[in-house]
Length: 404
Image 1 (cartoon, rainbow, N blue to C red):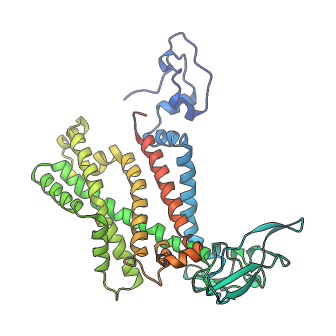
Image 2 (image 1 turned 90 degrees about the vertical axis):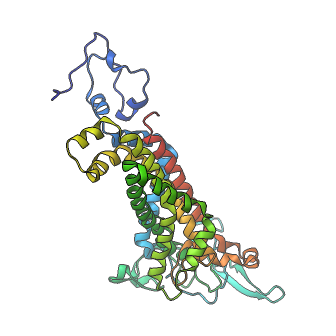
Image 3 (image 1 turned 45 degrees about the vertical axis):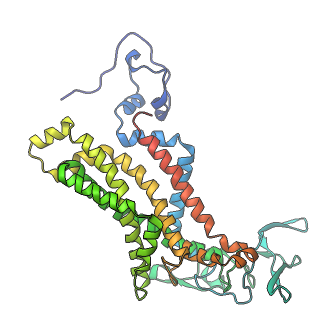
């Protein structure tokens, strides 16, 4: 066994010490020219693959920003009731298709903090349209961190437990707060987007777990054993990939029984997305296994009597785990878009389940979109989440590449 790391002595001077993560791309530093390695430099040269990936990822600003944005988005689904000013199905019948209320800070030259102006509602009989005008004489301050006793909205059961009324942001007393307007039933669009994030974001996670399980197992078997098994798996993949994706998605979704409960429909749509996503990953795993199974460490494990399942799980998969992580970050947004598209077409999730695709289903009426464009707001979180996953995937792919 090798002894501890010893200083390198060549009679030359070591460059000044730098923060640890900067040694990864310092072309001027030559370890052979060092008289002694500092603790930070030793840690860099003895760092694991995951540490090197993290240091390289931190240099990708957009990827880091996207990572924190996605972590915040997924954390929000745990406290959606506290974020949403209104309950999921709370209806404000006096404010049908109300436009978004602007948040102001100044009123007649005085700073009042965040507030909104109440609406004066009238009906335009010529165009059969509700007209909303702000009453500029009555500023109504927005309330934050409202306790159950002073909140006049609907209470909720937090994760099926205690009944609460605490919210981070609350409408003014005897007023309204429609940050993104209301829909045809007077329901707050912002609140429904906050609740819909639970379904739209978890579809990608659940789907990618199923897809990766199929892709890794089937692709691993094909790449490790090769021969007839590999040929059979490749033909199956080619048949699946030969079908047009969107028509196949629509056909499989339409086959789901209408009598199924919302939970079964959610699981059914997730299974459909996973069954159509695994072939791409299976081919990537198969190609990696074909190249790695001839390496010395695999041959040594076989000679020592290791079973194929152990070789695959303990030796082959960890060799390109970073590639799998990058692939997952690029596959999740595809599943989110797939669920959104199916629900938008009425073939995916259906009410009472609320997702971003279900909310966008109302945007099929082009006349309503022309008159009330804020009903397209559910498209905004879809755009931001998919874009964040793309930036994060690019950063992870660069960080996992040993040649960069």
